[in-house]
Length: 477
Image 1 (cartoon, rainbow, N blue to C red):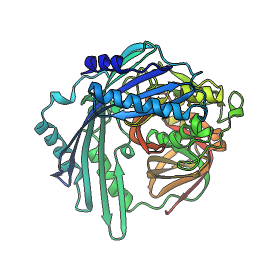
Image 2: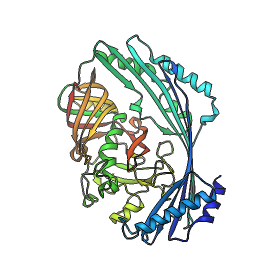
Image 3: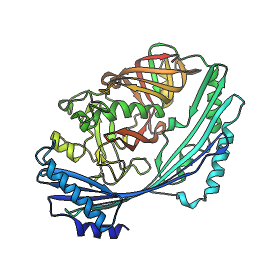
Image 4: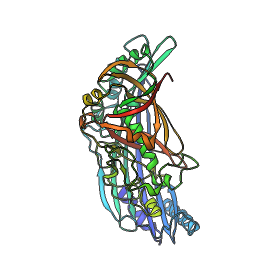
């Protein structure tokens, strides 16, 4: 299919400044066992191609699932018509943009392919985990699920680029809800954020086959736990909460198209402005954030973005100083700034826009015991359960499923309804200690939304445990 598709594209490509084809073929399977009952199995296959034309300064897109010569030709003609209409009216002069000439391949490393285990066996394994979650009569809802997607893409253009990539995504989900009287508490596996690239080995790597008893026990313990205390105190955040903190308070504000105003009427703007890069203190000296699509097991890893640009690891914040935005080739040209290879689309029928991919907090030198021992009064919080952030991605309020008091350097009693709030522009400056590599977790979600029409993409975050000082903490919500 791909070889024939490339030949058909070469045959119908119009005589324009730039023309590309981006093909994507995805097959997904979703398996869920809820309350020990198998839910309907969902299998979806979706394939198509996007033709992009840049001509005389304008740009146009047209997508089609008709991959015949006639279908591709019709899409190319529509894309050229839009490029001609937008000439002289676009936010950038697309005649001046550099276009990819890259050639290469990328493939997810896989130990145990999804198809190597039959459907019945996969369902039996889910049934087993579901039954382990129901450990007490007070547990009123529970579920174990695995979602898999296999994808193959091809990018070719009239500048000589040819890029072929193959991906395998695994997203495990586990949740347990306990109730007693008027109190209901839920624990999940990583807050639905344990997605990775790979095969079925991912389930072992993230604790899917081991954590059910722990989650059930913690949900039961939370039923009788006191609410989180309220006040200004130190805060230790587990990796499965740090991913949300990084995502909302660093990832979205640093997307360059958002900084340039593209998302104002939909997903909000950013408190970050172009003049901040190179000098603005985003966090303490311990804050080191990398854009890294090269980590093979992370969910948003790739060799090339959807504009064909090679992906490399780049520091966006180094020693607390803001260095570069998350902007692909088009935004870089508009802003006359360096960015990263993060021009990404959710499917074949969407044009690529600036999206975070793998945005990671690099590990530090403090052990978990060091961080807890440094706190006289504080709270350890794990697993995000709620989030709210203003339109400029600055003021925020986040909640966590699980908490433990820290008193005189020791973890003590469990607390529930754990919340904290702050301002992005100052919160990261309160970062006091960063955990070592052995506290780091690699996590990811397939559900980051942005753009009009909306695009849901996969986003990865890796982070160690971190300690913040003098944070506004509160409970009872």
